[in-house]
Length: 272
Image 1 (spheres, one colour):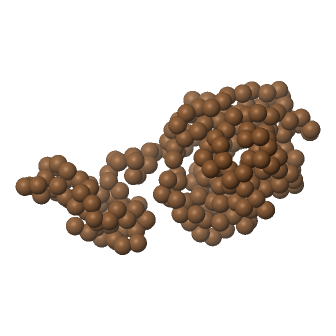
Image 2 (image 1 turned 90 degrees about the horizontal axis):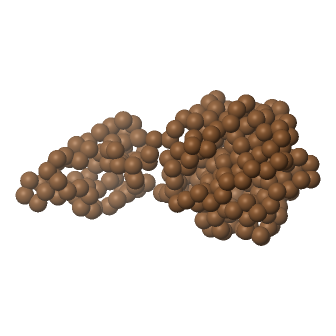
Image 3 (image 1 turned 45 degrees about the vertical axis):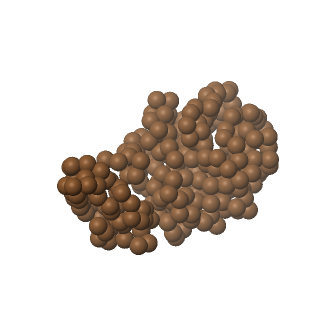
């Protein structure tokens, strides 16, 4: 059986053969899922396939369809457009503009795509201010290189800001907030591996929590902080240099902090 071309909210029920109790289902050629011809379902009850307008999924199959993402935070960007230079908000009403970074089709991404940054000025930046103390910001990052001190994950306040989170140069993360005060050694997955970070920022301190794709790595609170007001979020660029790596799914909360349990729920719902 070959499913028809995907259409938004379409559903197809396929009943298994009564003798073999197996149904072989194919998706249309060129489909992102493109499972080919496989014994995809066994059992006496019909398999329900649903479409999001892009592809087909087994209904309630979280491995294929993805767990529901909590709408935690004031802003969320799924980074799923797959082309163009605009990131549309999936929560909130602030879009972002992509400069240089390129789209990558990725079946393991939160929503089928991520952005690749080459370390030489590739970044994306919100089109209006989203960061005022206190604030929370987090997302998925993968480094191609962590040996450079200049490898920026986020900048608070534009491409020329010195307030940033980035690589420490020794395989860990560094936070640089409050002038020349650097906090080094935040544990993060090694080069080539995706990691999730959550930064809670206040006027007198900041807290950084990191995860790999399978477990929590670190939870550290440091005394460095400062008051920020109406700043842009820049992902992949600061005055110290650009990100050599990839970005996927970002969240921001402005004026209050996301709790650790809420961060954990976001990490679990978006695991790659």
